[in-house]
Length: 173
Image 1 (cartoon, helix red, strand yellow):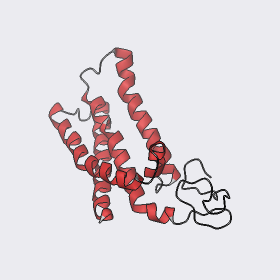
Image 2 (tube, rainbow, N blue to C red; image 1 turned 90 degrees about the vertical axis):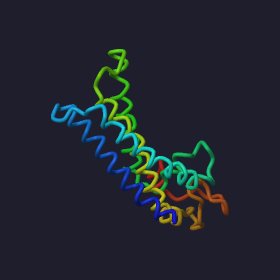
Image 3 (cartoon, rainbow, N blue to C red; image 1 turned 60 degrees about the vertical axis):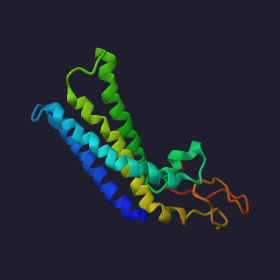
Image 4 (tube, rainbow, N blue to C red; image 1 turned 135 degrees about the vertical axis):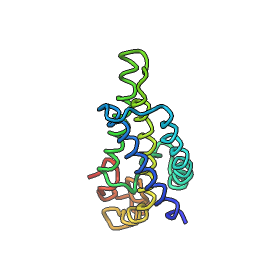
């Protein structure tokens, strides 16, 4: 049942990313300056994808400590996807807030306003991807002695040996 919800939400998040990026680039180049009346469409999509993302992310992270929230939520994503997510989030915040710091206001450009939802769409996309693929990644974790290890554990609960390196866990190679 969870994957039935996750697939459409992931697709809608991907479409939201592409629309926001397209409107931003088209407005930036002057080909299609975005009218202010069209921005609610992009933000309306956030409500469609963000509610299931929060609910399913809570389900994905319920057995983990709060400090490990993002590690747990994104543990089904490959390393390149996690890195790309944080680059996208940092870039969006830089693009959104640097003009505010330099000019003191956002000005009249809706293009800066349109780039901000990409953060939420990207997080939603990655969480849904992780949710779809987490079972495959959780079942392969082992310690150096071959015992099964929980997804974020650094040491085996059975024998105390270190967990074997796994490329799906952040910080591991």
